[in-house]
Length: 85
Image: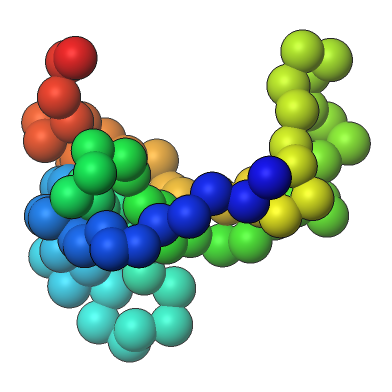
């Protein structure tokens, strides 16, 4: 069952903006956002075909879900903004 996301809004960016991380071209600029419903949204490189068969046996992905890769730097810079609970 596909999740419904409206009327959700982006509340804030987690971590530094792409241009602060050195992404000035706009071509590959991973990003993390906290949504108004408390969930998180990720902009990254779609890698489902490359990584799906590597998921551990206890991991599952629905047909409408995708595996998205973000850079280590993006997540480390976002760490300070991710709530503990």
